[in-house]
Image (tube, rainbow, N blue to C red; front, side, top):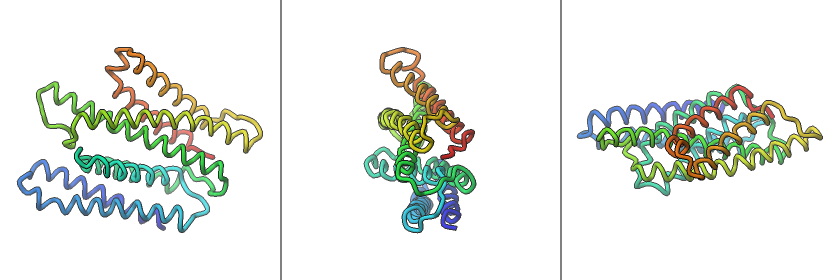
Length: 257
């Protein structure tokens, strides 16, 4: 029931942010009259985050979905980032975060569930959630970077969500770096957990998917760092494609534990 209410709050949050953004572009003179929508959106988003935490750590369910925890982690990272980058107008990114969290929460109502009982499993899941959240957020900023650079090349100074390009690039790179580091840890934990639970390392669909993701991000990370022009020029596009691979991996393997 708690997670159903969370989904409703995220829906109301997304609706508030979307209405605010569309009206903000068309009626900039009446900006002050529209700020209540943004405030309402953050109120719903914060309430959904708190309610999710209560559902996970206070009213602990026998089973929980990885997508539910992923949505909670995504909101938490965004709110944490927003605290330290207030000048970057990152609050305009709230519609993207709330809608993504809404999608994950809807998936969490039916797929990707696992029991809350094993410590190694919980640690493995925690690292997995942090990894996917960092890489998905990095991809969001890659998308914003692509749009920003396209507008600047066309002589259009209106940046998406009014976030400075320097801030977008900085967040894209930092989130990608830490996401890749934790993806390496996630791969190791997947093998350790398989060994601990089954007595041997089993390369099931989930482990193979994680390995393929690691190979992709490993190549992207090192080839871009070594100065290959193609990977430097299309880094944002390749990073965005990596996020699509992550979502497909979670959906196709259903990330069973």
